[in-house]
Length: 240
Image (cartoon, rainbow, N blue to C red):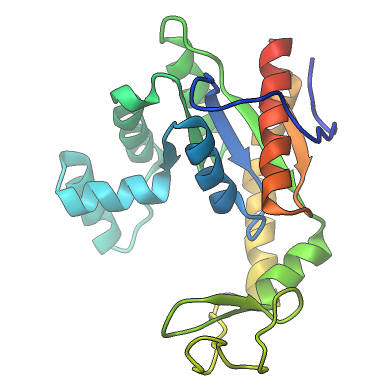
């Protein structure tokens, strides 16, 4: 049974006694996956596992995997999936993942999804990975990305459409001129969306076909989206 396409408004009471298992958050650039991951970490008391964070931590700590990754990046090459998989495997072996974890940015491809499923299945009594996609239509995503402005002093984030500063172009707190990141343009956004859809569409179908996929409406307040994710995970676990 799949919860795909089914919006769940709220879930049963949950907290740090809940065992969510591995939860993969999916969503296009700008949809708010990072924000939701942090909310779920606070709610469930499980770690967020981000491949970007893992890569930076391994490089900073000078681990064997980090040194290998640093050499590759210094050559200007992309870190291969196999090396990322090894970092994830080490992280999943740490005690704080026993009740579950929030996956953010991994798996990005079908190959990584298959590797993760096999890794989880090899663990005695482990719950299978479930995937929840935070959905927003293209135009709303475009407004979020192209309307974003940052204060270079206090790092406050505004949006010219949804959360504009009191004085156009200037930070409410610091009075500094707001800036737009170089990659917050429509052209860059279109490229990121194209890459995301090409890579992630097979991952979505992989979990959908197995009845381990759900969608939640991302065009709502943060708390409502979190409640939708919790309810979706609960439904998927009950249906397993």
